[in-house]
Amino acid sequence: MSTKADFNAEEWSKLVEAPLLAGLRVSEASGGGKIREAMAIAKVYAAARKEQGDSALLDEIAASPPGISEGASGDDLGTVVSARLREALQIVDEKSPEDSDAYRGFVVTVARAAAEAHEEGGFIGIGGRKISDEEAAALNEIQAEVDAAT
Image (cartoon, rainbow, N blue to C red; front, side, top):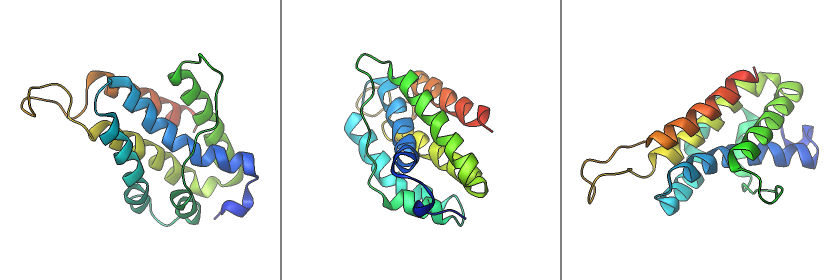
C-alpha cells in the first residue's frame, strides 16, 4: 500500500483535491444549501474513509486538509472537475493500484454526501427531495469519470 511519501507534492495535491472537487461539482449543480453541503463534504472525509476498507493512502488523504489549486478563470466547473479527477485517478492507478478501488469509492462517497446534505425543493421542509435532478446528473458525470478511468 502507498502512503503520502510515495507521491510528489503536485501528485499529492491532485489526490487530495479530487474528492473535494467532486463534492463541489455536485453542490454547484443545484444552487441551494451551499453551507450545509460544504459542511457535509468536510464531515464526510472521516465517515467516507471508514467505508473504504484498510488503506493507509486514504487515511492520509482523509487527514490532509483539502484545498483547491486555482484553475483557469472562466473554466466551467464540470470541465475542471472532470480533468482533475482523471488526473488523480491516473496517478493512483499508476502509483498505487491496490488503493485504486478504495480511492474511487471515496471520491463518489464524498460527492454523494454533498448531494444528500440539503433537501431540494418542497416548502418549509415538506415535499422536498434528497437529491435534485441537477445533483443526480452531476453525480452521474462523476461516476462516469470514475468508471471510465478503470
